[in-house]
Amino acid sequence: MAKKIITWIIVPLMILIFILDITTVVLCNRFCARYSVEAEDFSGKYGDDRIHFLNTSNSDAILIESNGHFALVDAGEGGENPRRKNDYPDYSQKVVEYLKKVARDKDGKVFLDFVLCTHYHYDHSGGFHNILTESDITVGTAYMKKYDPSLGRSYEHDRWGLQGIYDRIISDIEARGFTLVQDLPDKPFQFGDFTVLFLNTVTPESLKGRSENAASVGVKITKGSKTAFLAADITRTSGLEQLLRDDIGDVDLLKIGHHGYYGSSSQSFARVLRPEISIVTNRLGKIYPNVKWNLTMTVHSAIFATSDNDGIIASITDGGEIVLTNHIHG
Image (cartoon, rainbow, N blue to C red; front, side):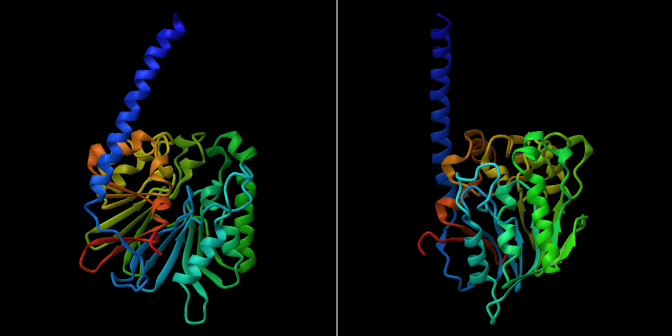
């Protein structure tokens, strides 16, 4: 009898979730139709103030470009993940090739004004080894917040090998002689035509033990009246959404936190930020239903997925528009 009662409860609940998910997908498609997404031709016809969201599956690698300057936020999944060595391909070479295509000078060399690792989960940090050791790539400043094992769970430190990942990145930076900054700036600074602000430069003591995601550094990028926020793995469950949302404020474009998984983009977070455009480093079908619901139903945001578009570029024009292009026709 108990099994029947449970079945009567679970089955209708699953059907309801399925219906709600389909509804949010339909609405998402409707909201996405407000934007004409062209194939990227790298002609620069919309200017050179752009945010490149690379297609590295459900991992982050984001190239910021402004007025001839380049910076990299996270580096995508590498090929030696201590947590899951055989589950995900190595995207680091793809990131290196993209940098050489987009950011090279006349001699084929790449100079990145800065690189930032938002936190040390491998799907954000794993590609840095190949990037930092690539002889054709030079970095001006490497922003690497100190790894604090007390922030995370014991399995993150012990089984996911975060200390080893961090140590290798620091060693690579020192071997190349790049400037290493571990006390991240907490004031806005100019980067080409963009104003950049790092948030959560010092993780509050109150978040210790929540997870390495609580160390995530958010990046706010502003040009004129337009603002984008790169939310790394900032989530409600880590406590960061509640702490940072008012400092972030209203934005035009949101890089969805934690690849659209559980705990990201709560209703209260969405209501404060109110993004017109949301970009997820994942497939749209892998975003949790509540995340799609909060963004579409609460603030009517259009959601674009990097995997479905083979990467997305958001150009912020001098005229104050955000123009989206992708690579799926390339």
